[in-house]
Image (tube, rainbow, N blue to C red):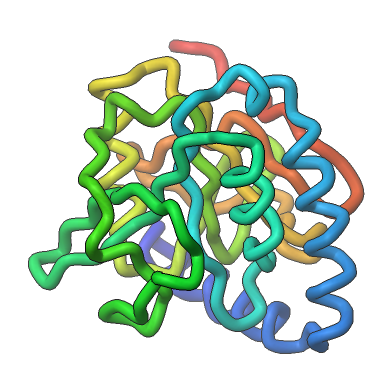
Length: 198
């Protein structure tokens, strides 16, 4: 099975897993993940923080976003453009987000933030592994953005938010898939093992 087919298979499996979570379970586990995220020493040092507005059964980020604003962080969220490009724009009021292309709340009127300005980025996904492997929903928006951001800002801290049920033994990866630095679940903060350079 090639990588593309394997990714499609794993996506199907983890979409079903996420769909099986009930609202109360998502809320309880998201609260634990939020607490772990806010306690990260890397977050304390970050001035500009990128994140995402959650939808469906993703790790709920509303409380995380509100806490980041309360802490005085420069908060930026993604805006998806029609040409396959995603950019990050500043958020000052969560009530002013408007649904974008995929129904995801976006700060379309916010000030544009250049990729190299982001110190730490919270990232969604369907499945992750302990080596930092991430499998998104298949549109490639975050993958393309991460490739650009990491080239401009090699020290960008990439933090995945996930339920423990989203952890896989190994996520299928292509050469262009950038690993996460940390994966936060309701049970632990995983410092991703980097594979040695060959």
